[in-house]
Amino acid sequence: MRIESVRAIPGVSGFFFDDQRAIKAGATQRGFAYDGPPKTAGFERVREAGESLIVELQLADGTVVTGDCAAVQYSGAGGRDPLFRASEYRPVVEGTVADALRGRDATLFRDNAATLEAMDAQRSGGDRLHTAVRYGVSQALLNAAAKARGVTPTDVLAAAYDTEPATEPVPVFGQSGDERWTNAEKMLLKGVPVLPHGLFNSVEKVGREGETLREYLSGLSELADTLGSEGYDPRFHVDVYGILGEVFGPPYDRPEVTDYFESLRAAAAPYPLQVEGPMDAGSREAQIERMAELRGALDSAGVDVDIVADEWCNTFDDVRAFVDEGAADVVQIKTPDLGGIQRSAEAVLYCDGTDTRAYLGGTCNETVTSARACAHVALATDAAQVLAKPGMGFDEGFMVVTNEMRRATRVTATTGGGAVAGEPSSEARPTGGGDDD
Image 1 (cartoon, one colour):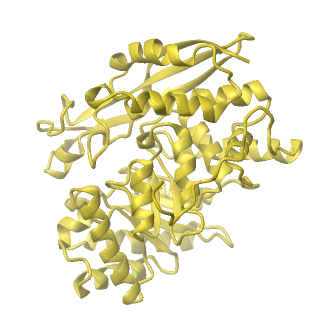
Image 2: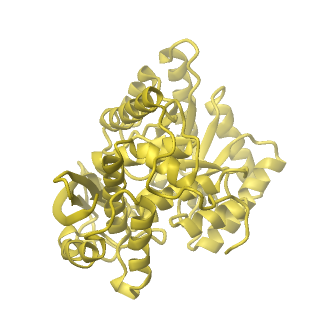
């Protein structure tokens, strides 16, 4: 089954682009928008409407499959690609990308995805393919392979990477946005496995001495006891966007810091706790050093709180570096930042055999199409958890990701799934802790 044509249509995403640098610098939120000038290149205001670029591949039998180019909410921050403008990249997708894919065998997902990555590698500087472009086109390629073979995208990925996919949905991580109480209640009532994210992206929200975060976790624990059903045992996961680094500052192996994390653990008890992005050290090397410093200190002090890498952990190489240096208990694999969706699968698999778990994340600023594709990556690689997305309303994203995984596992259980013909699956899987090639 050949790819006959490639089209691109500007669309909207599930949330907004936010200038993280301006927000951290004190931009004032009034209503939903922010006052103050932007500080990150490409932004015209601190909060801008999110964009996507819908990619359509038409196959030889007339079937049309899609993927959505989307970029993270905090574009341009922490080493990520700049703000994504759909109108800027539409001619690229319909031109250079289309020329490279037209006529190719749609069943060969890994080969086609590798072609896209190679095309990017051959470009230089500002001419590189934005990660959002590779993300969206690769989703369409995955869906094309599944359609052409008559299997699920989970089956395509499992065959390509020689994995045993999960037979039950992967634990879903709900994100609350600023409605951290109302949405947490919703999550508890729905039995969400991992919650609530919390959006603690300013000193005001965390507290000048971290007290507001601690109080929130204590209240959340009480809510879980009250609203959770019998046998419900969620994991708490809060994202602090580097703000604890502003509250405490380095070094992070001193008792003041470990005692604070112990107070967070006690507040969350009896539920396990993981804290995402405790600091933002300004570069990948510095971030790894500081994260490893904190992780080692917590371990030595017997503080049972897991730390999650986010800032400066964007690409596959970044994930590998954090894992190899033991800098995190969990790495967020921020799917739009890795480019091709196959790179997210490879990043999850790289964590196998290490003491670092893989959280297949992404952003609220994605689309239903990209969220559904990521659900299949999570199943094929059996990730530790997967983000509910898109949007910040919680319910919608949780529905999209959960239902897609339930459908896929049901289909696989009914049909037997397994390897599919048409693409070699004998290439070595990415494994953790190895040397660079």
